[in-house]
Length: 285
Ligand code: NDP
Image (cartoon, rainbow, N blue to C red):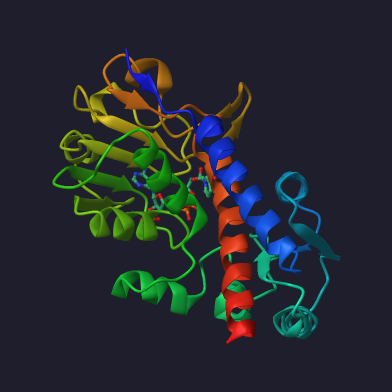
């Protein structure tokens, strides 16, 4: 039976650390501020944003709710980002993805000031990750690394397989594991013999978006399995891992819900307080 990697528990620890950091910034006269930009009516996005705003309230970060209608133009969104960039009371800017199809997501992410990019998705910040330079880290893979660290799972020298190569999860995940000295393989929809490749993993990360695709035949006995997937199905929310068949053979596994999801949210708070701390430091120079 696998040990449960409890994301809710680790996220609570990170949130209490963030709350302390916020309190100390407030003592210095600075309340960390997060601008939450949401364009359109996607119900899942609205629910994510509500959760993120509630998280901010819990730790004392001021969230500024910037909802805009689905027909918002690129120029209007650019203006909004520019205003947030130049507002000293805003330390982090979160643009909830996906944006409506007529908007250029890449252009919007690149327009956010690098220092306020608390999602860690600005091209410069992803580039800094490649170069191993300090920068805000993409929240989901950074949250996975923090969970592994909490449970004493050191990737150094291990074989890690990441299934998925998106810029939001798979690629930065692979880079962070590489930085932690794992030997990393990245798989995707064109990978041949996927179960065979996955069975080489000591640490298997599933970030695919296909409900319960990763079954027992993908998993080496004793492997650590991290399920990033969030899939809404008739039977409720499920991950990319078939928990029932994988849990008996893994050594540790993240549940869905209660695994990576809460960590992603906690890392957004951690990145926001870090951005505010840097901004305060800069003011004091
Ligand atoms: P994307 O759709 O952007 O990427 C999915 C990746 O999976 C692609 O690289 C794709 O390959 C690969 N893939 C698709 N089908 C297969 C297959 N049959 N075999 C192997 N690889 C395959 O998704 P995201 O990276 O944004 O998200 C992945 C999952 O993680 C989703 O379920 C999403 O909801 C969830 N998620 C969860 C978060 C959390 O906080 N827990 C945060 C962000 C995402 P190719 O590149 O070849 O198309």
